[in-house]
Image 1 (cartoon, rainbow, N blue to C red):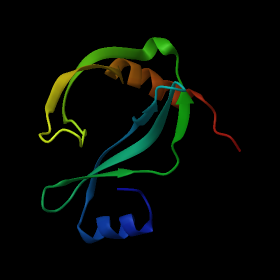
Image 2: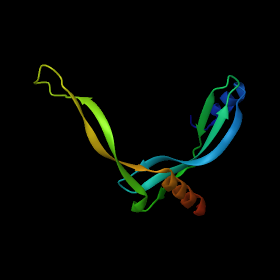
Image 3: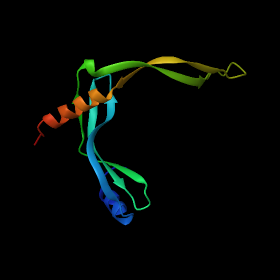
Image 4: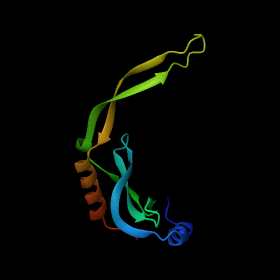
Length: 118
């Protein structure tokens, strides 16, 4: 949920209480080696459910290539070849890029260390 005036009125209507507020990596662009860091608030509603609210003042932060980790990911898909009467189910593994928790913490520190632009 994005943070705006409608979000504030919804949270007050459902009696939400702020549980924690933290900065997180919410998106990653591995091609340009940039990560989007934003503030995420966690609220607990009256009915016990959790609601996460993402603010709108985040920014892209460049990070070094050493933070990127590689692993194997399994996938399953159907063939899209229309010339074959029966579609086949194809399974396999693919190399995937990701950021581990330690790298995400370092990126958040880089975000907090940069002064705001005026």
